[in-house]
Amino acid sequence: MKVASIVGARPNFIKLSPVSRELRKKMDEIIIHTGQHYDYEMNKIFFDELGIPTPDFHLEVGSGFHGYQTGEMLKRIEKILIKEKPDVVLVFGDTNTTLAGAIAAAKLSLKVAHVEAGLRSFDRKMPEEVNRILVDHCSSLLFCPTETAELNLKKEGIIENVYLTGDVMVDAQRTCMIIAQDRSKIMDELSLMPKSYYLATVHRASNTDDPDNLRSIALALSKIGNVIFPCHPRAEKRLKELELWDILNKNTRVIKPVGYLDMLILEKNALKIITDSGGVQKEAYLLGVPCITLREETEWIETVQDGWNVLVGANEEMITRMARVFVPPGRYKNVFGLGDASQKIVKLIERII
Ligand code: UD1
Ligand code: UDP
Image (cartoon, rainbow, N blue to C red; front, side):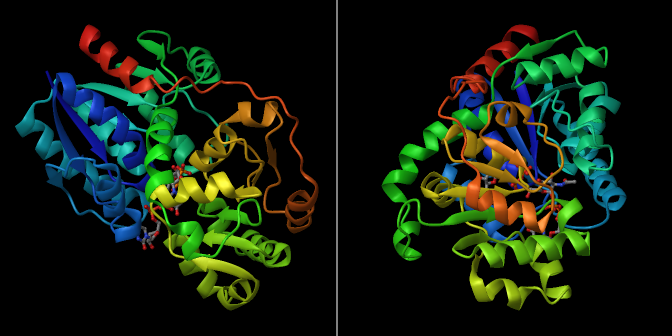
């Protein structure tokens, strides 16, 4: 059996890593990289550190408006799929790469398998929400990380070939944490003591592209102080345009985006995490680190229900207050699986396709 995995952005690479390892034990895999992310710290570092095989095709699409970017990907992916004729096309998460891969395959009547199906924030202004809905509705196999995701699909009438597998990011985190503890030098490089700093990430369009929101987040982070901020290029660009870069740098340690191994170590040792990332909210939960989320809603609702994550939007006062006072309860539920999601996914592909 031949599988085409389509990736292009940072979270796609992390999700691909455990799945690809399992796939290659039993099937032929080709990897198609759209080029959505291209800086070394947003792209190649993940292939190098996580041992993901070099992509067979690199489409070099790069950045652009949604329509342009998705359209360019669609055209270029289609050409490859026609030539390669895979039995199934695997897409991951909710990026424009995920959408382009799913549409290109579905239009060629190829089977689409969606890893991380059924997630919903119920905010259609969020580009990722549009991607999720469209991808789920043209997928033939839907692998859900949580029961909530399965239920979301049911409410939209998607009930066939839906499987609760657990989350592949649990698989990635478990494997990589062992390696990270051995290899990462980030705590020494930044002279950090465990539980002595906040870790922040910001890249969501609703925050970076809204000047008021970005300003209030930047002011909150600089008030909190003692923040390590691996800065996404999108946020860097906007912070500089709004002349917030210098203000933020005075009281916050803004660094380049880090590789996954360093990120896991920074997350594990943080006092609290402040983020608008989907993946980082979940990782905080899995590592038992309190999370303050810079959004009004989340698709990882279990982390909030369980008391480990608090939604504060871009409200400066709420962010600074929660950084001081937020203490989750001691309990912890395992809702994202046992670290065997990739194995389950590969077995299901083998059985069904
Ligand atoms: C994308 C995903 C988002 C995901 C995020 C992970 C979509 C719609 N969004 O958002 O779901 O959470 O990736 O990080 O697919 N840029 C660089 N270098 C790079 C990549 C991007 O400078 O290597 C800059 C460019 O100015 C670009 C901007 O970042 O225009 C945004 O990049 P893009 O991939 O369009 O969206 P992200 O915000 O990264
Ligand atoms: N991540 C990383 N380095 C960073 C920031 C994030 O390795 O500097 C990892 C993070 O640990 C998580 C993934 O990237 O596994 C999340 O991706 P991102 O926040 O870019 O996207 P989202 O999950 O919001 O789609």
